[in-house]
Amino acid sequence: MASVLSEIAVDCANPMLVARFWCEALNYDVLEEEAGLVSIGSKSQGPGGLKLTFAQVPETKSIKNRLHLDLRPQNAQQQEEADRLISLGASYADVGQREGESWIVMADPEGNEFCVLSGVE
Image (cartoon, rainbow, N blue to C red; front, side, top):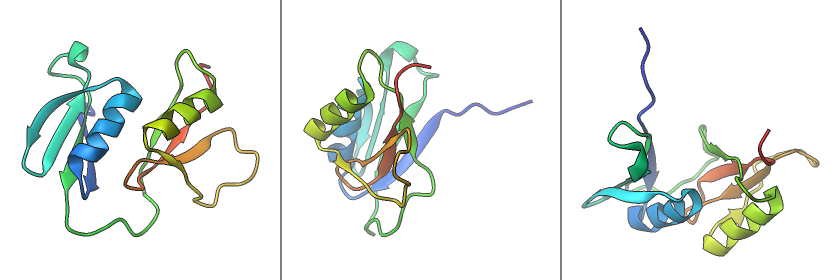
């Protein structure tokens, strides 16, 4: 018997701001919204699809994430995707990565780190 990953929760100050960024980044839709909580996902995956949920919390982010998302560009080169994400509100992030790594470390509008990997393997 095994579990299925159904939801990834992200703490943030402004759930809708962060949710809008990730909707654009991943071509997701807002699935649920209530005070201090926004869930997004792909409507085409149906009710069993993976969701990202952004929950409002009072404290600010203060250290590097212990868990992060890795994005693999589809139909774009790695740098093209990084540029697109910058235009949506992302920024480059330094988490101590070494020069010449095959991924680009970035942060969403509230500083949550994620990586942009090279194209399809």
